[in-house]
Amino acid sequence: MISAIMLTYNRENFVSRAIESILAQTCRNFEFIIVDNGSTDRGGQIADQYAAQDSRIKVIHRERGNIGAGRNTGLDAARGEYITFIDDDDWAEPDFLEFLLGLIQENSADVAICGAADKVFDEKKVMTAEEALIELLWRKKYNMAFPTKLFRRELVERLRFPEEGSDDDIALMYKLLARAKRTAYHGLPKYT
Image (cartoon, rainbow, N blue to C red):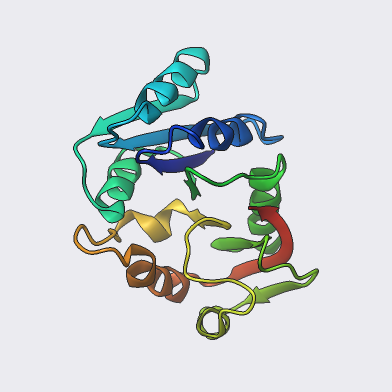
């Protein structure tokens, strides 16, 4: 049901923690796509070790590219109805996926957003595309970063991350929120 995509590059000291946070999810119906973006450390090997133990994990090794190119590789492999992105040095609470999926299902939304360690609000909102974009521009409750968000696959399918430069989040987030008929937000922190 959910494709969780994580790009990793030279984070051997952090990647196990990130992987384990996804494997510990209360929502069990997911695939976990880990894109090794040309790591020169043991990060890719660590991901392979986890994949050998859990069939939900698929590891893709590719030559070094920017974040956008790596994320596009993950999108190309994703089969889930919903897409989320995880950073390789972060941690997701055990109910992260369940919480976001619940927001989408309860509110007939196209996008769900939770709080993060630096953006905690016990507030719920269901927003139109215009309202979601205004909140994005204020950056008080959520920001341009892809983690903390779950998207319906249809929103992401035809859009691609830029494969040059480093501002992949900024180049794509506003387009996704503009295409969403409804965005559901609940600022409880489920991602660090």
